[in-house]
Each structure stands twice: as C-alpha cells, then as structure tokens.
Image (cartoon, rainbow, N blue to C red; front, top):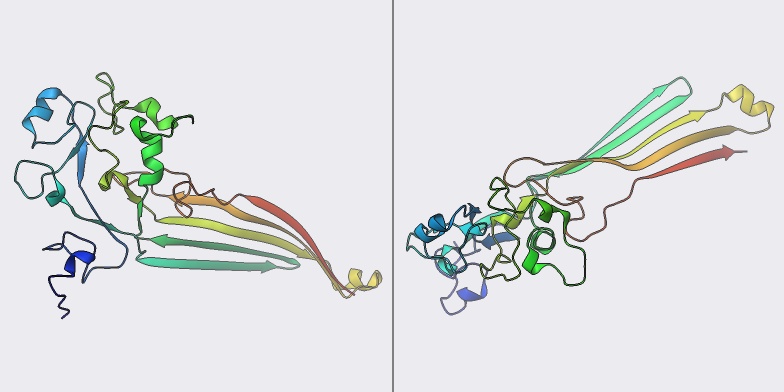
Length: 245
C-alpha cells in the first residue's frame, strides 16, 4: 500500500481526494462526462446548473448530485495506454513467386483528441483565418437535432474546450502495414545471362487502416496512429530488382 502525505497529494493528477491517479494506470484521462446536447431551453433550465447551458450546447453529467456542474464532477474517463499491441506476418511461396503481408495495430487505447476535435467541431474554438472543419456543416440546429456536433456559436460560454468524454475517442486500429510480391527468375535462365540470382519485387506500404467508426467513442480524425494534427502516414509503392553476380 502506498501512502502519500496530505500536503503533497494535490501534486498528483486527480482531485486530491477520493479520485487520485495513485494506483491507476499512467496516462489516465481525468475530466467531465458529456451527456449529449441540450435539445431545448426548457431542458437546459431543468438540468443541474451549468454556465452557458443552451439548446445545442454540450450537456455534462452531475456526478456528485449537487445540482450544479463544477470541478467536483470530474472523473476518470479513459486510459491512453493500449491494452494490446500486436503484429502478424504472413508469408507464402509458390514456385518462383513469393508473397508476404504484415498487419499490426493496437487494441483498447483511448485518445484525447481535444486539440483536433475542438477545431473540427467547435466554431468558437477554431483558429481565426483558417477554414473551419467540415464536420461543422452538420452542427446542431433546431431542424437538425439528431446531430452530435454542438451548435455554431461565436462565443464559448459553455466552456466546451474542457476535457470531457466528448474528446475521448478510440485509438484502436489495425493496419495493413505493408505487402510485397516477388518473382525470382529461374536458375537456368540466370546462368544463361551470367548471373547467379535475380529477383524483382513490388512492395506497397501503409495500404489500409481499419479504425472504430461507430459508437460514442468512434474515431473522427484521419489516422488514430498519428492523432490530432499529425500527418497520416502516406501510401507508397516501390519496385526493386536484386541481382547477384
């Protein structure tokens, strides 16, 4: 059992009381629990007191039941460490042909995408002078109440940049990392042209990515391996010729 003196416990992530990171995984996420969007002013008025509450704004859960949304409603909302990282290689040969393919990925990883998603989803938090995220085209309106994207607003009265489950998305993915097909010329032909061995191959890298696109924590970015503003790893193809004299 680990005992930390009360005068230093606030130096650790958490609220310093009953919800402290001590004993929890490294890279745990601490924040609010988003509970959809307010659909009407009546709904906002009837909810626990929340500064900035209005139709189309993110609603947060009152976890401690005191009828108001504040720092005491924080909780642990994810872990950025993956539960499993894996890689699988398959190789096949047939006569003079050979083929290999490599899959890899991670399972059970949460991502805090607030830096990216606040730009793609929250009008008031987007950078001035840049194009807004295309997801805003589906923002909540009185005639588009099924949307999960907050209504457009110049001001961020609801503090929607705060870390919450709205920004926690699945970082799980599986990639076809690379595949290669090759052909080794017959030995008799190689000798006829005064070489020992020759192989020609075609290789592709970063072929495809499977990511979670459903549920409350669906990944909305481009590539969960390089989340946020990271540039996705590009698809590429190379051809090679290996000759031994």
